Length: 349
Picture 1 (cartoon, rainbow, N blue to C red):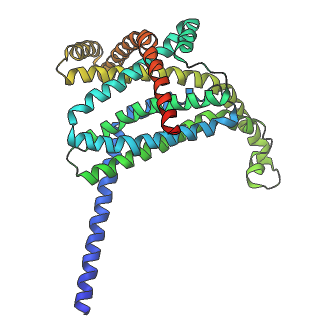
Picture 2 (cartoon, rainbow, N blue to C red):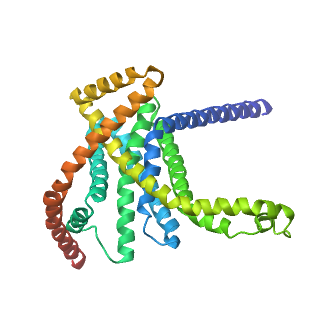
């Protein structure tokens, strides 16, 4: 009995060690995959705040929470099982789907550039495709849907990069790694976004705090409060004054990120299908530019390639704007009444 019990305990300890090693391996793979997708993660964090601009302070965090929950659904309920299924059953379909998403990002980014350069024409375009609404709740819902749609494309790129990082892992290890990447990146991105959009409110609170130490500890004001109060209040005023231009800059970065990431997906997708002329031309130009300044050559190569991808994305997005307005939107409007009518008929039945 005692020998059998000892053997059983040894087996349990062995299984526990194997499980711990497996968890450590998954954590390491998730960290590696997340690092590989860092560029797209930064793009995601830069894109999201612009969907909150224009709403009252009370609605900012609820909107971010809605987008974050939509992002988690995108990653865990849709993209994770889809990525695993496609990698097993139809790996050939991953690149076309990513290119479709890349084209959507190009359109979104080009539309923002079009809006900045030609605001009246952009407004007319948005009216035509039905994006201009007056009801605040409808506007919020529209913004949230747009944010979740953009997040879906960026999340798909993140999950694809993560999956490509662990090609030899087993099915459950891949699933656990992708889930870890999805949850971790969502927490990091939307936590950062929440901090960014609420920084001005924090600044107001700091600027109005005459006794910073006493306010935190609940103790009576001291001489330290008198020393720190000007510094804390100055920091608060700096946040209040600095956040509007920072958010504007972040919006520009987010728009640039969309055309850069979208254009890069298109260029690499064409290369995958044997149409690598554009990718080779961009690479040759980047290498030539990098060769002019060898000490910073690698950085210049990256900048030139990213800029070229952005130009490709902007050009493609510019072509898609009239296509969406004059072709896809009329088709969608013809289909939508029919689908609604069918839904009403089904309910009445």
